[in-house]
Image 1 (cartoon, rainbow, N blue to C red):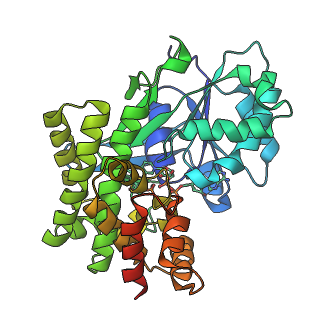
Image 2 (cartoon, rainbow, N blue to C red; image 1 turned 180 degrees about the vertical axis):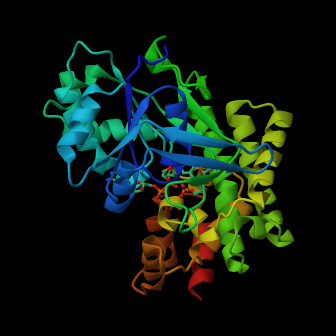
Length: 389
Ligand SMILES: NC(=O)c1ccc[n+]([C@@H]2O[C@H](COP(=O)([O-])OP(=O)(O)OC[C@H]3O[C@@H](n4cnc5c(N)ncnc54)[C@H](O)[C@@H]3O)[C@@H](O)[C@H]2O)c1
Ligand SMILES: O=P(O)(O)OC[C@@H](O)[C@@H](O)[C@H](O)[C@H](O)CO
């Protein structure tokens, strides 16, 4: 169903993917977008603006103007955010997986305040994480007085999604405008909607999200992070410079060889189609017009090295099948050497590596969340030892 005039979409996180992708597609779908963010300067700029431009770069690039948006500071005016959720048709977020817990209370309150006669609001978390909407829903349930039997939950449809568009950190001085690649993919699980999914042109509706999100996270993001960490060690600043280094490209191809075999077997993918998908992704990393950096893509290394993430999730599964995923382990070893003081998790990681009271296996299990006996731990502990020496 296309939205009635004046229908709103509340989007938490007016950052790169928020303005450059989710906000843009919701605007083009006909929604009035309400951006909610904790960054006062950003919200003030959005509130003062009538429009901003999404500039695509690369082959077939076009500019897109986004209008009819409003902006709310969720720290300064939480009541306004609750009121916006109470009447919205769609609630989306792109705040980072670790921030879901902080936006959940406002959504819970908005659902409580929502008139039960209104159509259900679609809640879609657009984060790089497996089942991000399920995680958000768990935090919303925890914030509702009635927990998982609270009647407010019946006023929403929660659906997992996978978003793919490279949106680099923006150059200073370009205001609200966002530079993005031309490519995008937004997959949403249609099953929870039972036939009443909203019309959002550009969205790819799928039956169950597991294959889509694993294919995306363990190809785009595993490959991207491998490029970033090996590229950082080689002294590259831009992702396009990193992937141009033959030694880095070789590592990326080896890692994607490991994840490809895993994904093809697990999700019964067509091997030729998947090989074409991998090639297209490497070509996206090569885009020289995209000012993307190894430090943005490598950000938050502890999140990226955690249990359900882009390295350990496929790596652990491969190890459980009896094969040691050497290239994934080497990329994880490179991640350990991502020593970038501006990144809080890099600082935390370096402190963990420097803690002499911990054995290599202790460090390996703390980082990955795996048990010491897991077959991925011993080879990862060897990389920990190398990074500490
Ligand atoms: N940039 C990309 O290429 C890309 C692509 C696909 C998915 N993603 C995912 O999208 C999410 C956001 O990434 P990004 O690159 O846009 O990051 P970003 O830092 O540009 O944007 C995040 C925004 O969230 C805001 N925020 C933080 N805490 C908040 C809170 N409590 N309430 C409301 N807003 C809050 C920040 O102020 C910031 O504006 C991440 O999960 C990322 O993995 C990013
Ligand atoms: O956003 P992160 O930190 O999970 O990962 C960094 C990049 O790999 C990511 O933002 C990609 O640009 C994006 O996932 C492409 O769709």
